[in-house]
Image (cartoon, rainbow, N blue to C red; front, side, top):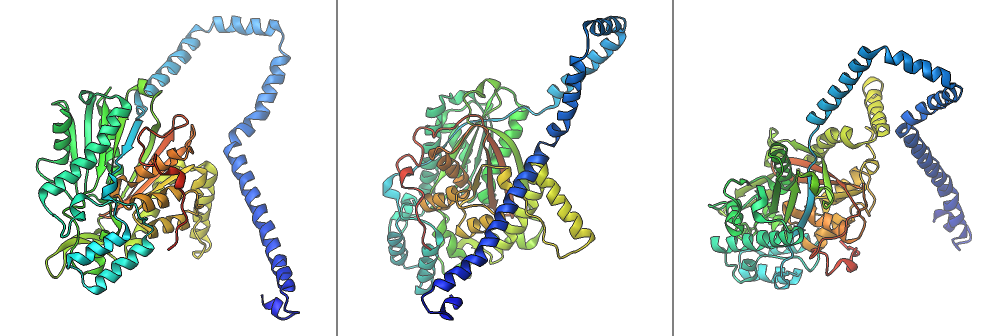
Length: 510
């Protein structure tokens, strides 16, 4: 534009100057793109490229061999019975060891997400109106919540539990139990209906809910409701934050590796009724604006016959815990404010700590999932940085070469933005996370399942596609689960996106 002002003022010169500057950069980026694609192709197929000349030589030699040479070779082998037996024994032994020691596959048969009734929807106007009518928040706190909601990425159709729709809210143990039952039983009813699995066939039950842990436990409530068998191995995980869904899957996986021929059900949820903050401390008001009602139920199997009807196979689970660091431990912390009111406080250092935890997690995950070409680049960068120049930027692996789909915990707009930037993802890769945050809000540990349901509802999940579920939680933790699609996956009946998927993606304005 400066060039335009310096000429005739019609803007034509300015446009030409800008084009001459942009065009070489564009061509350079295109060339680099194709160079990198060529590099990845060569490295990924290096073994085949090396074996090709050998295969050609062998083919030529075989074509020149006459029948008499083959007859002499057969006679030679007949008189070397000991060698044949020894080689066969080694081969059989090796195959036996491989079959016995390889981990049995864990299949995800199906999953379901709870869809609350319409009367529990909480538009921003209703949220602010009820917050005002409670009389617990001063003007500064109300304005703070309004600004958070405007920038949060949440839409007008998220849900709050029944107790929070009353003025004043009807906070009680009975109301909290009612919320838990509606969410867990609603998700499980759909799961059992879609899979036709009988309750008596379930051998493992894992339930995770961070902030509500009554007696009897939530897992006991499920056992009682569905009359699960008496020797079921049930677990109730509490206080583990938004990443507990992956932890629950990991625990269920370990149990399925030990106990043969059975099913495991994982239920992930959070409870809002007794955990709403009615004070004026800003750091403790943010969860009020982000957390909403939601839950999921997942059916896992170690039965080989279930492979044909299952959606995914579990490839990897990688867990990172930074609880030994005091700052990380306290960055998401349940406590009382100066007036004695309980809430969850979020530290200003949360995003920095989440970034460091993510680095540790992907350092472990990378070698398991990245193609060898990316691992070589990453290793070479580390060597150069160590030996020659400490200021060399570390190479960020291209995880788009390892995964087709990303389910980033919808903890908030800032979390999604940060991972999109750090992992160099495109808008379509984070679409499921952004749209889940918009439609359902932060549903804690179940958000990654709403995101997977979104990808299925869009018809994007193809056979062989790999999915990376990544979640962050108090403690501080970063946990990853990797799934591989066993077929072209269609959305399950009564998907939470069934009635609105055609409206998405929506344009977000912050």
